[in-house]
Length: 326
Image (tube, rainbow, N blue to C red; front, top):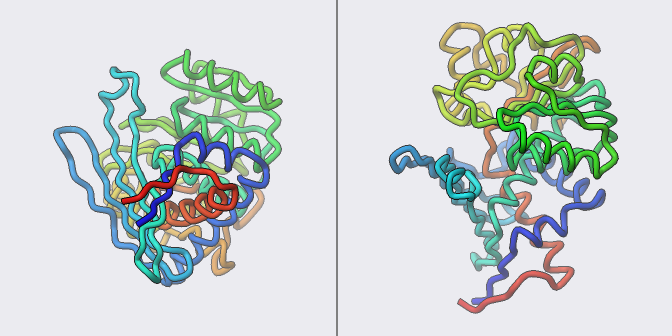
């Protein structure tokens, strides 16, 4: 049994280009469409807590793409160890023969595919992309900036984080890519000046308030992965005209950003549109030019499968990776 090991460095190398990013964004868009059409086999993720540490197991399979399983964790105490708070591995297998094909660094893969999902929402839902705000300055924020700068023309980015040093590091990455970047002292200042707002935090309380939003904005929230946590307050939910999600089932079971407003009677399941329905043309991502739109993502396994298959094909074609015998 021969298995290809693909490192995080190699994932970065094959994806950090305009062609690499565009191919990944298209793969994720197709994956969303296939999921919403029902041809993807994807159970809800299994979640286990070891004390306060979150562990998830995410399987997914579909013909002609493969079968994958991601094991991922969120360990907040890793900040004190100088380690990433989110880590994981993805195993990719052949859906016809059942043979294991690759083990891929899941930390890098997750960061890239999450940013690619955001790019899909921007492509299909946003009015413009000149000015962007990023709330948070961790790994996800970094990869969002890298990928989105490849996929779109960004003139200016406003960055706010509780950790100013990390915000300054993120601003430097933006500046190195020719983007005018500014670190601001509040989320309010960042949001009020932006067309696109991305929240990539580990906050348990809202970091975006509806009173900050203005006409034509597109908001993307990728944090708040638990039922009692939120990145968005009730007023955000009240003000948006379109709420797109990666999976109705997932968001209604996994994030307080959707679960709590449903419990409070602000929205119901019928208000949620899957991004795959928008990609396929079944639903609209934006009803009017002045509408405020929202993409709430918790990350689903079909994104991992699509990204793993795409990365594997490129690495294989370039004779990269490390082959081991099992």
